[in-house]
Structures are given as C-alpha cells and as structure tokens.
Amino acid sequence: MKNIILILSFIFSINCFANLTENISVSSDYVWRGVTQTNHSTAVSGGVDYNFDFGLGLGTWISNTDSNTKAEQDIYTNYTYGINDNISIGVGFIYYNYLQKGSLDTSEFSLKSSLFKNDLSINYTDNYFGTKSSSFYYNILRKIVLCSKNNINALIALGYTTFDNEQKANIKDYMDYKIGLERVIETYNLGFYYSDTNRKDASALKLNDQAFFVSLSKTF
Image 1 (tube, rainbow, N blue to C red):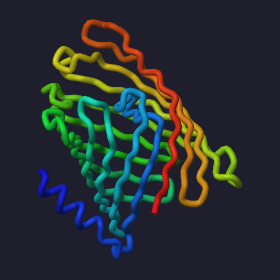
Image 2 (spheres, one colour; image 1 turned 90 degrees about the horizontal axis):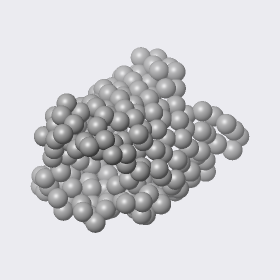
Image 3 (tube, helix red, strand yellow; image 1 turned 60 degrees about the vertical axis):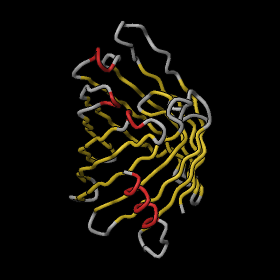
Image 4 (spheres, helix red, strand yellow; image 1 turned 180 degrees about the vertical axis):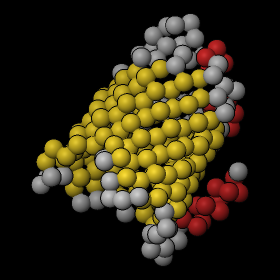
C-alpha cells in the first residue's frame, strides 16, 4: 500500500497535466457522515485530482484525524457519464487508509447519480472500518442558489447508514443530516455548517454528534 501511495503522490505532483486540480482546506471540525473525526478539533486537509475528458477521475486526499488514528489518506477513482445537462450517473471506489492504525483501513464502492441538481449516492463496504460488519450508506444532497450575484448557496444533505451486524459495528443503524451556507469567492469556498445524527451504540445509548463548524477551502 505504501508503494501505491508513493506512486500516486509522484504522479499527481506533476503539474503539467491539463486536468489536474489541487485543493487545500482548513476547518474547525472534520465531520464525516455526521460523526466528528477530529474530536471537534481543527482539521487541515488537502488533495489532488486528475480528471480525464471521457469521465474518469483519479484522486487522493489527506487530513489529520483524532489522537487515535492521527491521519487519514483516501485514494479514489470514479467514472461519471452525463446523459444530458440535468442527469448523470457514475460509479466509484475509495480506499480509506489510516496511516497510524491500519486495522481500520476500509474499501468502499459507490453508485452515484445527479438528477436535476439532486446528488444521490449508495455506498457499500463489506468491512466497516475493521468491525467485520458490512454496511450501506445512502445519501441525498441538494444545493440551492440563494444569491447568484454573490455566489451564495444553501446546502441540505440527508444520509442513512445501515449495518448487517450492529453488535460487531457497536452502532445501530442511524440517520445523519447537514445544513449549510456557502459562498464562493473566485477559487475560495467559505462554508458554515451544522450537522447531527440520531446515532446510538449497540446498547441503545444516544450519542452526542451535534456539530457546528466553519471551513475555508481553495482550489488551484
């Protein structure tokens, strides 16, 4: 796995690729599917993506995480086919690599579509972060233009996670949601978000996942 990471890092560092984009972000929290990954602390992340004209994309992304896992690097690929201006479909694969705790490494497959500005996805893994339980994740996301002149948008997202074995995962099936406001200024994106879940552990104890966080990102 380390060799793959080194090879991808070398390839993506060559800026002569016409379709290469880079991004960097600072956020007051790293929240993934409604759950903080940094114990509600600051996250600094960055990534590179290379997109071919025929719809194939490759990328890698890295962020600090909590004191247990230290850092996460994702390696992913996806293919998107545009049917028309309002409808597209795609498939994807992502490998979550935890640099300090490899037992949590996870591979996930996805089906995605965009229908009239609604982004829909279904994700599947047969081993949810080392728990040996398979899991599905369903998500719908909608961005609403509030002020086109100033590039201000609202964001609404709803997700649902299921497990084939809640005892192994130590989490019951749960729903998450996120709302936010975003403003795009040239290549910068400023976002304000609130997220929460109805997540419970295997003993039915409600977990506190409420999070309000701010992020600033830039694409190169």
